[in-house]
Image (cartoon, rainbow, N blue to C red; front, side, top):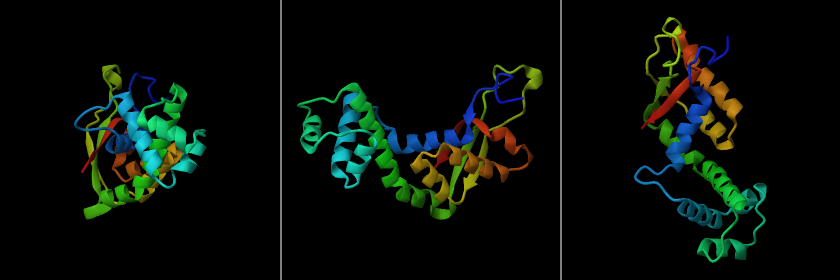
Length: 185
């Protein structure tokens, strides 16, 4: 029987961990930015970083320096598809650039604890529900996880997540799919 056939809802643990890392790096804690503000942030980042030209090219953005400057000064606006590509390029470059720093922060002082929220079983019949609780685990070494996250290698993230869960006692397979993972620290 596969995941969700009895009504449990959640996502793969590796994907949930990648999502939590994205939230830590990209989401504003104190306020939300408008689309225009996020575009301006992406353009500012992509025009300041040395390796941005290759990232822009990899995402199919062939705008020259004058066009990028016009977009940044808001005298011209990229179309919706270009805006989406700019956001993807920004996120890719930001992941690669922040990975060494993030690895150091999460590895410091003996690692960083994560909070694992099990799948939502609200729609599962009572007879089929499992007694799952929020679990806590200290991740001692984040190097491989952050490297896979920076490359957006979802398959490797899943393998790493399963390795992390195998260190737990007998119910470790119950946490291959989760509702949410919090990074504490």
